[in-house]
Length: 265
Image (cartoon, rainbow, N blue to C red; front, side, top):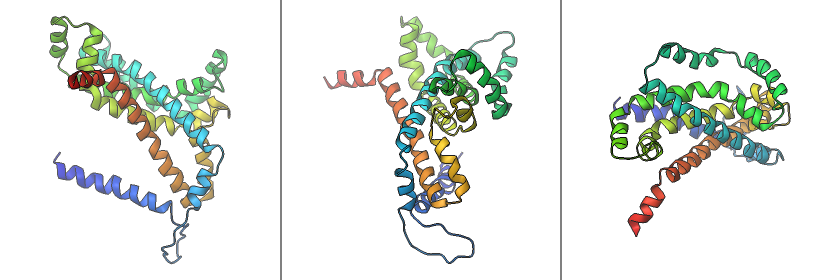
């Protein structure tokens, strides 16, 4: 794809809607037929920030999303590598089974898993919510990581081992840096999907786990687009924070800090 097509698409589909959303969070409610005004208001942000549950809900949402992300990467990276670099009987069937949870209605999954969570003692807890968020997220992570390994030549990994590097050293110094674009995509998808789960969180969390969607969705009935815009802007910031956190963790894991320090010495 030519660069100008990408920049024009990004400008039309991302930049303009994002700017309009931010402007909407500072302007009063406009109803069809009313004249346009250029009044400004902080009412949307005041409603958002004065809710005593907001800060705790944001922290819980971010914490659960990060836990779900690391569980996704822990399972998705080796699964993607196996599906890409290994040949075994039933591989095609396994690739189909991996994406089947995406076709399962969220309500059906939540009701079925709720019984299991009660038996395991994980219902009404953040850990139960994090585990159930794997259902809509892990198929994407496995597919993204498989695509990442498809672009990684197995001979490069083999060459590292021939030079005496162990499996962990090869992963940390060769695989991880080259897989970072795929990891970023997987992290952004996982965090966004996890933070937007309302049904799964409400049923498995049982009202004890208050995440941002639990507070956010009731405002949909108010038809107050100023408050909704403020919520949406705050909602969009959390995945960015999560991606920055994972980026920092990957940088430390790859040893770039220590390498740069040695270079400075």
